[in-house]
Amino acid sequence: MFVLSFLARRLAQGAVIISLVSLLIFTLLRVVPGDPVRLMVGGMAPDSLVEQIAAEMGLRDPILVQFGRYAAHVVRGDLGHSFVRPANGAATGGANFDDTTRGERAAVADLIRDALPMTLQLAALALVFALAFSALVGIAAGLRPGGVADKVAFAVSSIFISLPNFWLAIVLALLFSVKLGWLPAIGYGGFSYTILPALVLAVELSPVLIRTLSGAVAAQMSESYVTVGRIRGLSETRIVAAHVLRNAAVPMLNLLGVQFSGLLGGVIIVEYILDYPGLGLLTINAVLQRDFPLIQGIAIVTSAIFVVINIVVDLAATIIDPRLEY
Image (cartoon, rainbow, N blue to C red; front, side, top):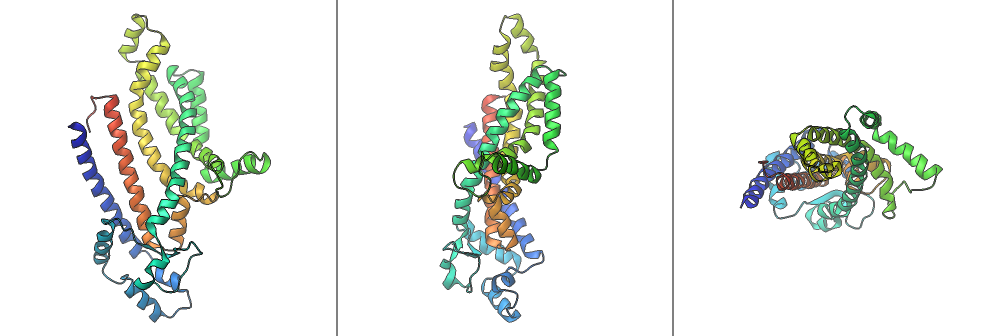
């Protein structure tokens, strides 16, 4: 019963968040300078043609009217069609944009469906790398606060957090791809192409995970149940593995939910630099091309992912510690 009420409440909150994000993005796209129709037809096209196409596409209607029309399609699962990307996958462009040529333009849902798995794969691998390294360093630091491991963890975190991801992506590409030839760097031709950008993102994630994990473990080690366990004769390994790490997992879970959701936005620069065909690269191209439907579709999908991840994380946290209330 708790699970059903929890899901119903959180899904309702998520629907409100997604609606507000959609409205905000929709409005901002239409008030910032730049006319997407001008990009479609070219700079030499007469103003009369620009206005004619804009009117046919409904881009000159009031914003609330446009949003209402768009929202009615979204609730039916239709995210619209790209302004500039043809369905055949060719270069951007196209001469006619009325409803008779609607099928010639790529569906936003199809473009996102092709790019999203690539980004999810990249984000998941980066999270695995970051968790493995952070657990190794952070747990050791938390078990001996102020010790050598804690100082090493602080130094590593300080160095990693100071490295810009765009600079690190270039340096790692030069080292592992150009110099050593161990990893491919540009584009995508298989799973191995995911490793290099995942390493870049893992370095970006690790400092926060290390400090959070070390702090959580250190806080649990000072709790009374640790002393009681030692008095009862439990081994240090059992105390840490069965009790300390379990209780320290709750703040880590909350952080992981935020970090994984943030990865979907943080991959933009890395994907662009390494030409990785994920949601980040798709977003940058859509912004440069003023492709309103594609930008709006990406915003809705990423918002929905953020909501779902946070619901799953909160539900998992309540399973680990039933005392928590959401």
